Length: 302
Ligand code: 13P
Ligand code: SF4
Image: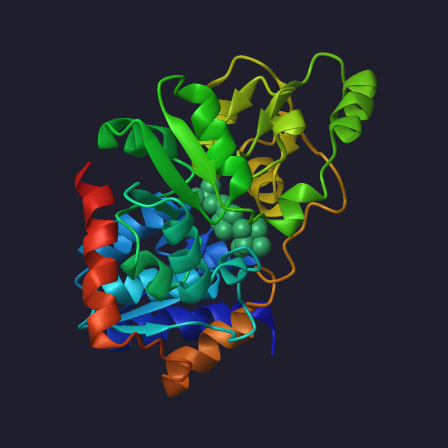
């Protein structure tokens, strides 16, 4: 079916069924054509928590749809394609988190939103890449355990000299494929370009950044900056959106390897299918959801 027809059908069904589509910045860019809100994890969590819609189609990965369900338990939350997992979120399970806590007793646990519901339920407060530094600062603890992303955790530690951040050894394979040499090479070709980096990258990559931030923060920085040229050091979806929105500026993707295959599973056809049939519904058991809600809610209230 032609994309135009699919888009029209999705728009019609959204109205009929009182549904919204939330799209993460790493999604295939054409998905924005049907998205009510598009942005980073923090922004989308807020939208999921506040919507009056009956159905939320989450064009993102599993943990994002799960987070939306936890925040809006009375809504039907649908994931367009069930293959869309997050490799980082799968790097820690409940047993591993409990062992990590036992090794470091009495220390509060901050979990990155890229984690399963049961890991969130077992943590003290959640964070996203947009607010990780502020969340850890607001905790006021001398030591924190940070799961599952060792690189985001280390970045937080580098920004808060008075807090000892003990990180779990998880990572994002997509961001870890980006090497400092990639930036050095690109800077040789584009010496005036500003380097905008996502904090899931390796610390040696983050060190070369002019700006470090979430996907929405990177887009905001690039849009407001007087500079004209930017090396984008995160997933390709950010570059696709920046090129679409600011054609007068230059955006250089750091590497062809900066693609999250799991984010790209969702296609317009999948959104249409789940809206038509109301399949791929996300469910979280009540006890886990209740505790995970408290962890996420603490973050949203900070
Ligand atoms: P943000 O959009 O919150 O920066 O998240 C990046 C990411 O990797 C999501 O999986
Ligand atoms: Fe997970 Fe990395 Fe993909 Fe984000 S980019 S969804 S952290 S695997």
